[in-house]
Length: 519
Image (cartoon, rainbow, N blue to C red; front, side):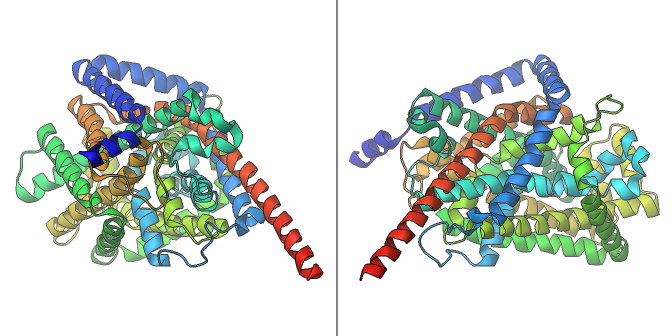
């Protein structure tokens, strides 16, 4: 009883009860009034994307440039912690970064995103499907996407390991700028926005990718595909990552390794067994070069005349998507980067993140593109006529030898990705529930279980309401709008605090030098 009371005293009840109430209200609205809620979020998304698109575009490019400055300026030499030895090997560190950041939706989008671009008239205007349907996925999941995670990972790593702060919250990252105001209403508002944005981001991920799991299991085991099966799968995934989170960081590290092995097994299956190895590699290499060559133009184009609204529908959505997702994961990356320098954290994060992401899109995406361009399997046409994304993806799997075996491998990999990602997110967001929590302490298992349940409620409501992909994307865009301002605050706070730290280190070095001369 005494232990329970002690835990209760540690809890920041505002950060738990208020998000719970808001999520319950939103779930009720989406389930009771699915049509009206759909119209409303599409209208808000249309306004933010159309009128405020430049906000997301400038923020995306600006944050990427900030990470480059972090790495190659004097700030890059700052070591995250006093220890020179790192906690994890480069492989462990890299796999945890990739698997905790990119949930199962990377498999979903890798397999079908090229087909969505293929239906865009703008892609044909640019130069055709072959060149641009393979390029845009690398751009939208490339350096700018990872910059949102990396800039905050470096900032939070500095906050935790160098400054030794005992609050693992978004608001704490703003302290160098806002001072003690983060302990009051302003800080609670910042943390509430962060929590709700994360819930929206995870809901979007679950709602988009889980139907693919449902369709895959239906294909292999003969289950009746539908909303009920999808919700059962969601609950099963929640159970898996809830159980895993009880094992703490060691469990996450092992699961990340297993997830990586399954992921690369799936990639090798497509690359070697599909018979399109040369096409996949050549198209991927060409797309990578095309993306690098046109990076600045792609990052700044906003279609001012609204001739096709492609950047509003896609680029703006993706930058918003990464913004809501970067609420929790950077804390995790910063936490596991103890002993590394800021430069190593930034460049290593890009290296491991982009390597995994690009490999996924190049192999999985270009295999499907090969089947359409060379063999006449019209996946993009099937989607354009109203076919489900899940069925379109399974049509691609049907072209593989022992296709059902590949589908089973897909299911296992998706569950592993979900579990690893949400293990890390649950671990981090549970820290929001504490008034104070030291860097070496892990949240109580009961708190982690609470958040594991929280993360599953909103996606169930969205799936139950049968929202469209456009509406699901809209949820992320709306939630990301206020998060952008907080990211700017945290980035500015890092540079201010790091500048002061380097100044203090310089003064300390001078004092030590004077003492040595005197002695």
